Image (tube, rainbow, N blue to C red; front, side, top):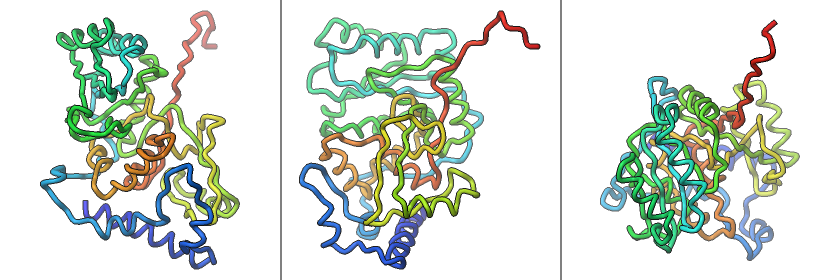
Length: 321
């Protein structure tokens, strides 16, 4: 993992030096002028100090991190992780869980379902919650309770290596979906097999670059489209484009329907990134989605890949000719 973090540090240093070379600054007085008191903030190029100051402690973090291979073509099954917290809104999720574990097609590719219960209330407070618990007695379904294990109420809990996922591929869902058909899911899984070190998603977002960064990105568009980085300097504008889903040019994906290699869980909770996880917890919208996409892209050196979440059925009445 030391070599991996050295790569991250080197990339951050190059971008920092580039910003200085073109006359842009990360001086504290300038950065402070752009902050407000309504959201959480991270220091510019803070990852450099985080890596340099990290002291390994196997007792505190016993996991061994390694990057996944680029392909996992021999994999035949994956794990599905749902995050839930409200025992009053289990109907849609429970229906999807039963479908994925009992349907003839789904059950061939889904090895296990894990529900990460992130709520203060007990899952079995309601009749449907009790049914969910009972369903797990006869099916490959287990419920993880991170709050009982001493973790804070954190959206990042679904990415913790303590879950001990048995498969290399993980599919993520929120408790309210949207949920995808077998054919769409299989398409996403097949794309993941061929790009196992990238994050795979169906609901992708763009980050609209400011003028300087957009101009820089044009210079590298002739290379592989998911394997380059554009520098982000303190004075650059960056807009989270929530107005449309990006079929192309995605820079992040939303969790529901996304696929991720289980090797990344070790990194996402690594002590080096603790300041980033604190940022997610403190920020009003708890942006775990953009955080996970950013960390995985930086670790893998590539952008997310996107698959279609809707598959149009062929019309049997239309001839092939």
